[in-house]
Image 1: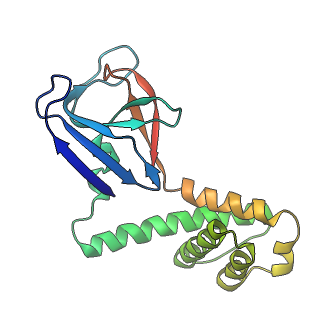
Image 2: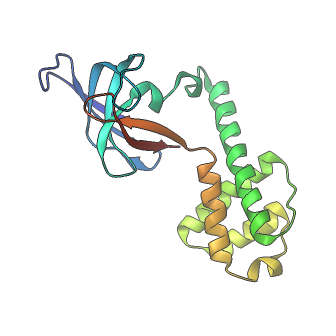
Length: 193
């Protein structure tokens, strides 16, 4: 994740900082980070939440605030390189399982592979699909998953690949609540992952 910050005063809030956040393939709007508290729920106070707030663009197109801790929760911040590798491996395997399950459902066939292999197949297929190379994606499925190329060639293979890749992406995405300027009213969600 790339972050740039500028400290100063904005809208009468001492210590406010501007932050540009780029991550997960999504460009987040130039954000105002303000230390303070806000409540959850619609129109009624709840337990106050403290921490930096980041201005973002919700999936519905509305601008609002998320907690910076929600963008990078402590349990997803590795303490060392080994932990980083373990977190990434768990993420890859979750994506791979969802990817293979979607393929199996689309093909009407059982696909039984180890999670690590499914993760690699997902990653390689995703890259091929994003490059627009259906032939390369099919080669990965044959090589990594042992799927019959003739079976894959029948039907709308591109739609099958697109849906399977999306299933892999959705498996590791998190939706973070986005709040209005009043820091109380939930106005949408921001998707990361």
